[in-house]
Each structure stands twice: as C-alpha cells, then as structure tokens.
View 1: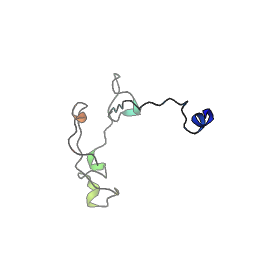
View 2 (view 1 turned 60 degrees about the vertical axis):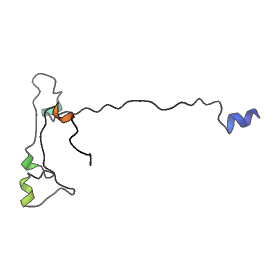
View 3 (view 1 turned 180 degrees about the horizontal axis):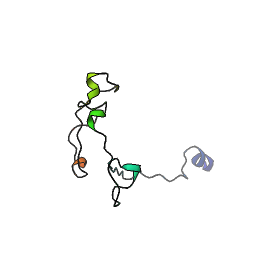
Length: 89
C-alpha cells in the first residue's frame, strides 16, 4: 500500500498553485545600444519613410518588402508608449 501511494499517486510530492508576475519595459533604440538613462546616450530612431512596415514608407510606391500588413507608424515618448491605444495584433 505504501509503495502504491508513493510511486503511483505521488503523494510524497508537494503541490501548490503557480504564482508570479511579468514585467515588460519599452526602450527606444540608442546608439551602440547604450542605456538611455545615462548622460551622453543618444537616440537612434530610423525615419518612418525608410521602414517597409510603415504606411509612410517611400518603398510603398516601389516594392513592399514587408510580408505582413502595413500600419501608420508613430513615435511616442516613454510615457505615451505605455498607454494601450488598441488591440494587439
């Protein structure tokens, strides 16, 4: 009986529910991937007209290299980027 409980039922194993938290941080692109909170760290944003996945891209009139849908691209400050403005895709 004891072997049945230990081996088959696993009664020696403690069980508990899973708990945890997820943290997600947004960070702008920077030169040399430096920490944007440090002095001297400079942003390195690409122009929206060079990004194939943006509607504003000049590549739209030539050839679209983006296999998915294109959307209007916008830049946000760190505070504004944290606000959800629509459903995720």
